[in-house]
Image 1 (cartoon, one colour):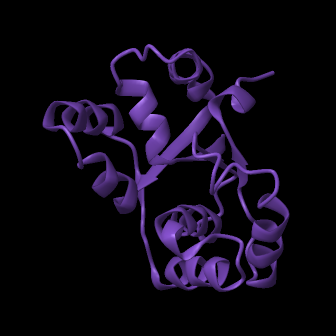
Image 2: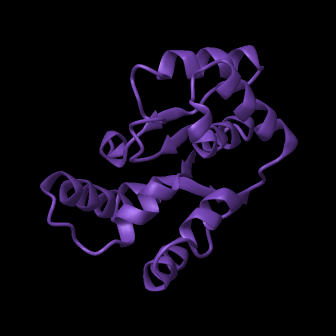
Length: 156
């Protein structure tokens, strides 16, 4: 079974109340469709970083996010992940202000996860940043995950 690291934005879109913004509503729908169908083809992981981010904000929304992740295995945010995250920042692939995003990528990479699923297209699933992220991961001795949205991982 292929592996997926579930970044916090996906859980947020999955559990949020329907948006009136058409683009966000479409992303929410795509996320629910992925969750209810294609997700079954993958072993899905989170990390303590995802859990910590999901706990923030409105208490009821946080409860829904945590409930959706219940039972998903958690990857360790270890020294290798922290070092790779810093390398992504030092190499200017990820801005310092987005250090948590660098850590999401690095956790997935050091644990050999095939896909990182996200709606964060500013700092993670960004076609302009992808080559530099991949180059730095490989220079640090790890294969980068495929950085993608639920829409890109819908299936065969």
